[in-house]
Length: 321
Image (cartoon, rainbow, N blue to C red; front, top):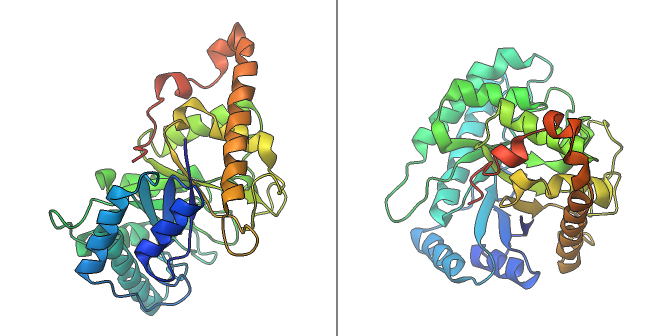
């Protein structure tokens, strides 16, 4: 598992890459514009080319991910908001592809209590429209997929279960242009446990059964400020929240996630992930590997037959690019 961080893009895209390098990140995630305004930041082809060149030459940062603006809501019944969301997401995707990003993470939005089934077709049609509006130019852009993030379960948020994400992917039938981002805090807050070998294996098994073994693009690695099942999106530094090192370690060290990019979105000291936060994540991963190794005898006998087989049979889950 490659450990990375979301960093500020203030001062330019290349500056964000340099900050990620300085704190020891192996993966970087950035917003392509302010996450709380509609107006997209305009990047010329020369700026995007400089970022691609800098990223290709960086000795430690192996992949770039972008995060779409928080204001986007593809499930809204408001036509004006839907149009603004479509335009904003398309602009974000054009920049992400121009940067050579490996994925654009998206919070799908909220149906405000109207029900998932009622918004499903609209969400899919909007996603397909956005993909059509962000063409891939040979030599200047990559086939950066949109990675739909699981939600913490508040209100009418879309993606509060793997089944909802799977329904979007299945109806869209967009091959590898769409995928999934798994957020550990959102998973915990939505009432999904992973604090043991069996529980972590069950999560990975369910992910493979629903969205598919190759749909996972990245992991957002966060502890939680709120209790299990609280249905609120509140991130804490690794080891300082209600999830804790042990539970995070079980999921991080699952064999099927071995090559997956894991991106910290923690507060740090108030300005985002620091070097010590990346160190804490790596310690959690090391502890998780030790937990799996120590628990190896339990795989004999009946547990060998009943526990999830994903780690053995589908260790290539996700692209990990």
